[in-house]
Image 1 (tube, rainbow, N blue to C red):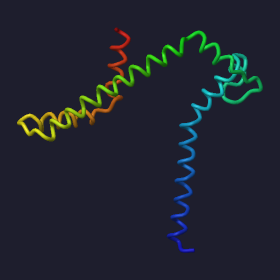
Image 2 (cartoon, one colour):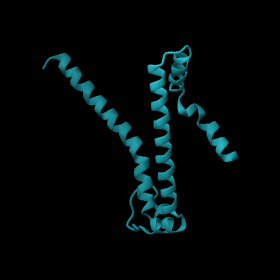
Image 3 (spheres, one colour):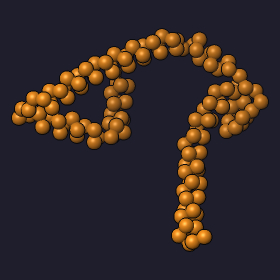
Image 4 (cartoon, helix red, strand yellow):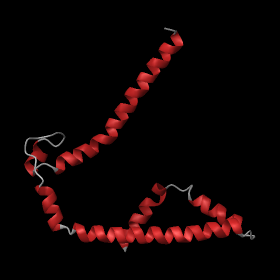
Length: 135
């Protein structure tokens, strides 16, 4: 085997192992949440990072009964669908106007819209959460 092919194979193996490790680090917290949601309180405190023998779905029943999930889900769906319809309609109308009707300010408006996509959400996330908590 040629040295270049062997180096490429070794490099590919290292990248694969590194990707698997990163994937495990990203997925493991979700696995812990799901596993702990299926445990009793005793099971969570005795072994919080792995499976135990006392699996139960009573936590889901309790949460569903205590918190009106059906009402919350319907509200979320209605708000989301309504928002998507309104945003799509306004965006389509704005896009049509910006592309078909050339006025002095159309390029400025276009670049302002494009510039908003450059601001990452994480930079304004804290400010939005503070506003929500104050409201």
